[in-house]
Length: 153
Image 1 (cartoon, helix red, strand yellow):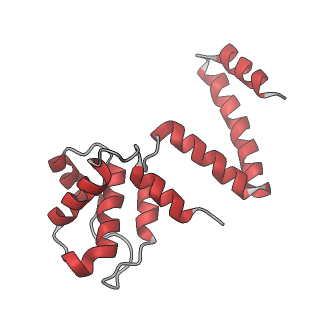
Image 2: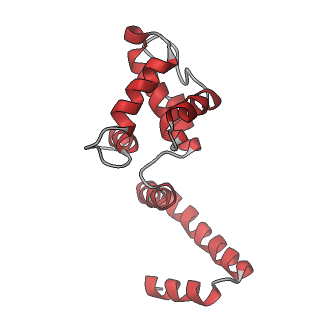
């Protein structure tokens, strides 16, 4: 089957939620087979889907997973600040991408706690300047940086 046929099928069933759901289930089954056959292609495809939904930004689950793997300079692992704590600070600084903010604050703490201690406002100012207010940075600078770090060789 060619991709243009799939597009035609989707146009035909547009608005028929039962048929859309059934097509979705068939496509999901195919993706599960792809995951077992070629994990790299599956991961690439799922990342493309992620970017369609979120753009070059973290979602909550991905940010929490990334943060959970951090080895912090203070000897701890994972988050220093919870989602709720970082969201509260994000609101104070006018940040809309909560997942990026959660990742940014915890990542900066992970690497810089030895220099700056644990004052969330210090990290908030650094994160805002580096990742959210940088005038020549591309949209999604933080997410793109993270993706570059985890890229497989």
